[in-house]
Length: 135
View (cartoon, helix red, strand yellow):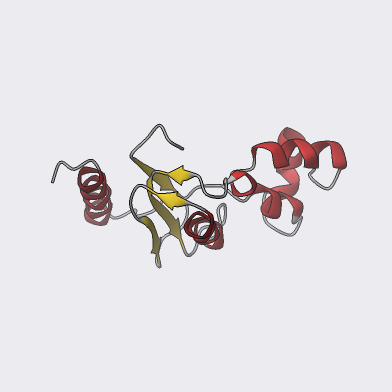
C-alpha cells in the first residue's frame, strides 16, 4: 500500500470470499474447479489469506483510489467495489481521496459507445494527473 501514490481499480473482484461461497451467483460453482470451494476448510483458509477485502490493514496508509463498478455487472456485482471503498475509508488513512464511481448503465466491460468510453478514459487520466500533482 505504501509503494504507490494513486491506484485505478477497474471493476475489482475484491470480495472473493462472499462471492465464491454463494453458489447462486452465476459462474461461481464453475470457478470452484480452478479456485477451490471456499465452503471446504482447506480452501477457505487459503483464500482468506489473499482476499483483498479481508486483508485491508487497519490504520495503514493506502494510496488514493478510484474504484469503478457497473450496476449491471454479472461478474463483479456493484456492491463489491462499493463495499471495498467503504472498507478502505473506514479502516485506513489515505494519501488522497478514495473515490467510488458506479456506472448506472454499464455491465462488466463498461461503455460500449466509443465516445462514452473516451469520456471514461479522460476521467481516469484526469484523476491520475491530479493525484500525481501534474495538474
